Image 1 (tube, helix red, strand yellow):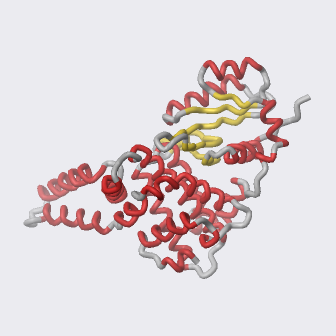
Image 2 (cartoon, one colour):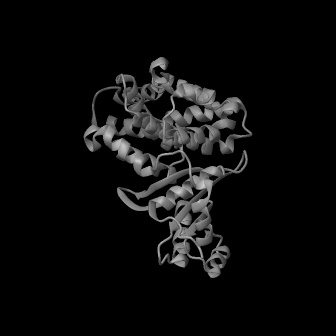
Image 3 (cartoon, one colour):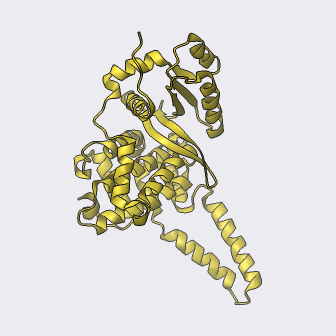
Length: 343
């Protein structure tokens, strides 16, 4: 007789722990959004480093109800993989019929069936010294008084959603905006709640994963090439310097047509260039362009994700030198006192 597998959130947590134990970066409950609509939740989003040149992104659909409708879930997971342009998908189901596994294999969908889930229930790999996603969200709500204190939960959910379709410089810059908000909370408060550090570690992990994904195609580039590439990306976004300057010229030209003030177009272009120049992108570019940093980004992200969900939240000083260096650079980027950030 097969033991009953875990259900609902408990099953998602057990599977998250399992995938963490075999080396994946894992995020639970990312919402796929289109414009302002939440289309669906991704039970688990996996990110793996297969080689210096290759990254792997997968969506995991988990259904272990009494009537799991496993064949339909295979269609759903495969369609979601296609829409999100991921590299693969997995269906975890309480169904134990061989036909389900066979159907999955035919359509390049990995199936973790009821027998696997039952074994997982007893496995040490499903048990780790971590808080659950629900406990994480509760801590955020308590620390920020819900939406009254800045809607930390909403910021966190949006941050997770970017992983699905914004592993780009635009996504990186949005994560940096979030980090700036929470790091200033740390600097301003003498004794910030531990949830503040939890969300800082989580967002920094997502930011680091995005930089790792971006740099996968820059492995063979020279250091100076990577540095210029990164600096332009952090300063001008995904579109790059050329497109941003082009839009600036068009905007300045349109204003010049309707405002009679002499030299207004040139003034606007110079102001836009000045604002872009004020972004301290060279600090980030110098750090992330180093080969030693680039090679360790995935491991840094794994460590940060673990820190975010560990029962006792570690201080930066108790983490690896690579993580400490990263936070020192981020503090410099925001012109924050390193001692206060690192304390």
